[in-house]
Length: 154
Ligand SMILES: [Zn+2]
Image (tube, rainbow, N blue to C red):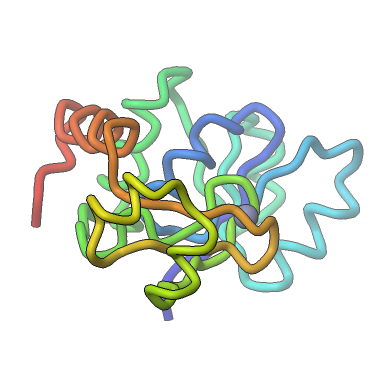
């Protein structure tokens, strides 16, 4: 089964980029260890920059860098993620759940017309927050960023 992550308070940006790459990355600002415990018990791999915290949990990875680029590389080098382009942009960056392709009718009613006509496929919808997603310049910037960071098409 694919790894699911739990990013601690200092790693919100990292969680976002893991979601961009299609990974399940739970994130919240924790106010206590109690909740971390339950989420780790639930099978999540804890990512933390805090060594005493990672030492408490065998299912954890200590993140050394404070740069998101190097953080992603650390997780890749540990063998937990790879650049699987078919998974990119398949997850809502806000809700952390998978987004589903919608029908043409649904898309026509719910997104701007010019976007509807530019995108014959790949219009997706988040059932949690109700946002629609489609390919575009914002997404292309993120793809270029990931490629610059060494996550080449594979
Ligand atoms: Zn959402």
